[in-house]
Image (cartoon, rainbow, N blue to C red; front, top):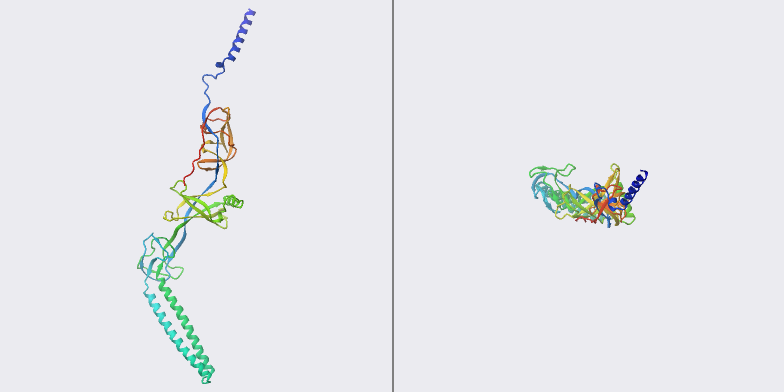
Amino acid sequence: MHKAIQVALAAAGVLALASCDDPAAKAPAAGAPPPMPVKVAEPLVKSIVEWDEFTGRLEPQQMVEVRARVSGYLESRNFKDGQIVEKGQLLFVIDPRPYEAAVDRAKAELARSSTRLELTGSDLARAEKLLAARAISQEEYASRRQARREAEAQVTSGRAALRSAELDLEFTQIKSPIKGRISDRRVDVGNLVSGGSPQSTMLTTIMAVDPIYFVFDASEADYLRYQRLGADGKRQSARDGGMQVHLRLADETGWPRSGRLDFVDNQLDPRSGTIRLRAVFDNPGGMLTPGVFGRLRVPGSANHEAIMVPDVAIASDQARKVVMTVKEDGTVVPKPVTLGPIVEGLRVIRSGLAANDRVVIDGIQRARPGGKVTPQQAKIEARPESS
């Protein structure tokens, strides 16, 4: 009986050894799933310029409030509301007749003063001869010379009065001081308007819209970064007036409008901690209208090599951002990364990722840290933004 038990144990040992050498015995159980497939690719390494984007508003290059400079009844309007007007174009006419009469009076007064000047001049010339012959006294000569000086002063005053009257007459024709788009009329023909004072009647406004300004605010951090880039020669200084920028309106895609940065304010606003900047854009068709909001992009870095991946390849691990990478044996390894901006449709990775890492770009939900996956090779491609 004891011997039979030994034989049975030996047979069981042989069967166990045979099962260890059998490949079928090493295969996973029929119910265990195989590693899940995911697409992997090496990060795209490309020379780029990072762009900063700002929201701002279009403003006119010039804005003029057209006001009356003399008082009177409005006689005519010579423009269509909302049209483009040229510099010097006649806009309004104030009834000129009272001012024409004032010019005539000033001319008559000047003529009378000129006649008196001639008379006193003749008297003074005779007095000089008589004084030389001792025919008049010194006092009489001095009186005639004083009369001559008073007549000269009256002529000067008359000429000034005539110029003033002519200016008032000229001001009855109100002309556009700039080229631009005019607003609607604020006063209709036939109404009395006042002029020549701070409370003068405003008749309309004109805005110069070609070229046009785009005004926006940058933070103190952005401003200091730009200053250092310019000081280090890595980027053109924003104050040079030649930095190229791009604009798009709310209904536009890409960056279809190119302009240049032409102004940086001389101080930061202490309340908001921002500084005002301005770009200028050509606007020959008048599409860009003052008051419209838009997005502006400004070069935010020097040209440099960057590692980029699709945004869908980035996962969140509490406060950290991670990228799932796959080792040669299919093991998933998460790597914490520091993110930069999106450039050409891809996210810039500032640190944490190597150029030869294999990044999961599709199927990230199936990639578990420490788990196994079946990698399928793919390729990351940038999508240049249209301009």
